[in-house]
Length: 486
Figure (tube, rainbow, N blue to C red):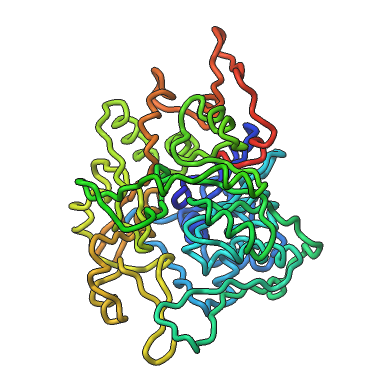
């Protein structure tokens, strides 16, 4: 969920409740480095680093980024170099260690299962993050926002500490251009863990049965199931199939062609979990009646007590839910990826276009940049949310910059690690959510907040007896036990 919304405390809480807790791996290197600059409150990052099999690298990490007294509120975070195809040994090490830290903390002290979610659209850090997560014992890898055909094979190779590579699409590449690859070489990082790693299960997140068929038949290695995600889910949505149509409010129109044929998915012989629009009481039973092994839910967990969203955002959202003064907009332009992106229309956040328009454009994180071929033949990087003049100078079309938002900085801010820019402006949050957000009022009752366990009880249709104890009216199926929840 977003950037560090489903952070380790939330994933740990879900896992300890018997479900699959999932940490977000997107931008996790920047998140962990910023936690260190904020003083590593509670000492959690250093505790995880001390348990890692890369002691020398861990010591360097602490020496470079840990500020015992934290930062002042007007002090900028030190920035990591933006990712490129030639990112150096240390840049990859930071991502590897951060993936390890987040999963280790989520799994520490209990026997529950933990997964990690990454975006196919952010390919450059993914191998390093995954290798670190595998050392921490991650059980499941989930990936959407694209077609992650090469990830299963990469997991196979990294489990044996072998070099893995992902092919990177280059905009403007010619037919005779050599393919470009992002490589990760485990042997470059001296580790005390030399035995083969447990290869995690892999669940691609797909929005069409044709994509499920492609992954089943053409993936570079084995997959263990699918997450079938509909357009009501939060974050990035798959574009509608067919010609683009917008409704009167400027939102994409989804139709029958965007409904996944579950019978066709079932024919592939893999278990699948349903996501998007399943955050309501009884949704698990309904999904299972449709042949699903279970459900994946994000929105209800995003605003619970253990969530990585700032306390202020959670309070604002819950207050707005109670009054009904809240809306979720599927913005076709917000994301630099070109995919529709769900944005919560909430007062005092940059999700409002008129507020965001006042922000000075800057691209200093670069996770969503695209690689392109320069006239010189070299590979360059650009983002339609960067300064328009810079984007055009790199060969980009100015029309592609219209309405684009810096999701990298906005989502970092929503997770409580906003950058202070050179003009002293504090980056403001962009909040994403699925359409089920108004269901939160059913969880609250007379309370002002709710926990991750409350969400699980609600989804499983467990009800409180007179003494406040939970009794499950319908037990969770064995297959659903293995699959995604948060």
